[in-house]
Length: 632
Image (cartoon, rainbow, N blue to C red; front, side, top):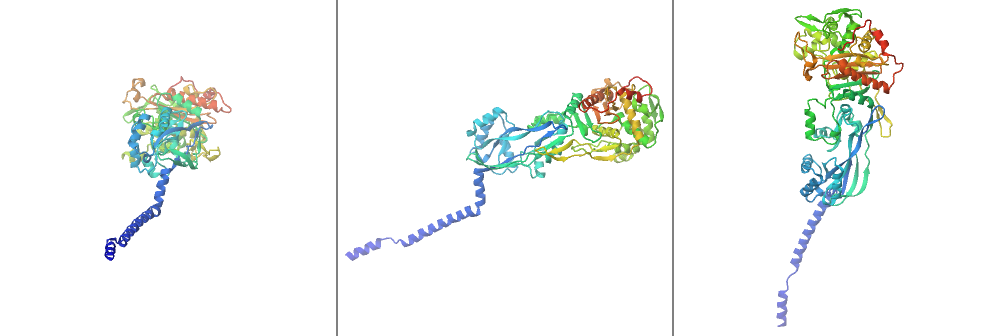
């Protein structure tokens, strides 16, 4: 019985060997899976996961460099940088992004933040890269953001540099403006990133590489919702170099104030270097609105303004030069021996050519007149005859030599070349032959002729300095942060015109008479102690009907003539040359002349002329007979 009972108990005992083996196999498999997973995570994916962990805890903040400052010729600041507050969000740090965005929009009083995040993602934003959702925050917005920081996971306040133009619209077309880098810019400029500033216009664009500097960065530790805990490492940024311009702040102010609310442009240059002393274009705009982030509505208003405030008329506006072009005729005719200094033509008030009368501006005419009086009194008939003797191609050759009808080379974008017509030009442009009658219009700066104010200023400078054509420049030097000079910009000579000094003396004497002689056309530009040489011009906007003389004030404003005046002074040792146009203002002597006078008065107040002479002596030399003052 005992043996039987033992056998029964033995038969009921489970066999553990297979179960242990199965359990061991399962454990081995599980451990293998865990080991494989650990190998995958820690070996194969180690670098990626480590980066994700670090980016979740450690962030790299890019610090944009401060743009270089801009000074006038006397080192007075024109453009600097001020701090701007921005709201940035890291979407990955917000557990409920829609709620965070809604709360942030309510606090700041703005909308459309979600679209900015979507746009950034569409443009390939990396994970944990912050998105600037609100810029240029005012102080109440900054306080609201900081006081509700715990309720805005992933949102941070950033301080960025903002371009600041100290004198608003002053010299706006020359200084230009900055804006956020575009997708098109990013495609061609790999060193830029979304949100960076870039020069869009004027000096800011042409000297972008100099002004920009090099960005730096900070490595910081953040908490679970992206709030900054501590700074780990920093790479300082390198500010951009500063620009010292050739313009004078006081002279620029005077030029713009003299033009006032009228439409026009003025360029003043140093005839001995080609340096720009002032460049004004009116109407203007405030570049600060671009630095602050211009709205679509504000941009549309500027872009569609019929007065075109964004256009730099000094280099983009092309106009018929009117009688200022007679300086070209005079030099060309004397140098090519088409006339002599004693050649005389008769002016009865107009001449007939073919079946059309070409009138002089003075209805009763000038009688028998030679070159000197023709310049002083701006006789059209005299220069019709000069043009007929020269021919359009010889006129065009000298006009091009004096810098008209071609770009000046100034380092500004969108400069226009203008037009100096010739037989070859008309054949190429219109596939038509040149008619001799067209030369008469060209001779008095009308017809197809179109020039910019800068071109006429450089022409006046060339006549003033004896025949050297300079490239206009508006930057004198580049300075490092410590004030050390990095680069200088010496004068650049584009060409030397070998003009007979006697020819230049004859032309200059005529220009002196324009301003100082009793019968000159620019008495409004006369200075008491400085001899000014100049030439007026009236650029016809619409062609009058044959045989009809329309009173200027009877025309609508948009059809009235433009007024020109070019000048240099002192006449015997020039220090400044100027060209000015006032649109739809009529006669140049009474509209542009006073503007030029104010600028010259300010210049000689700032930079007194040596051995100044009374203008009365110039008048005595410039005129042989007294005639009542004229106004062309």
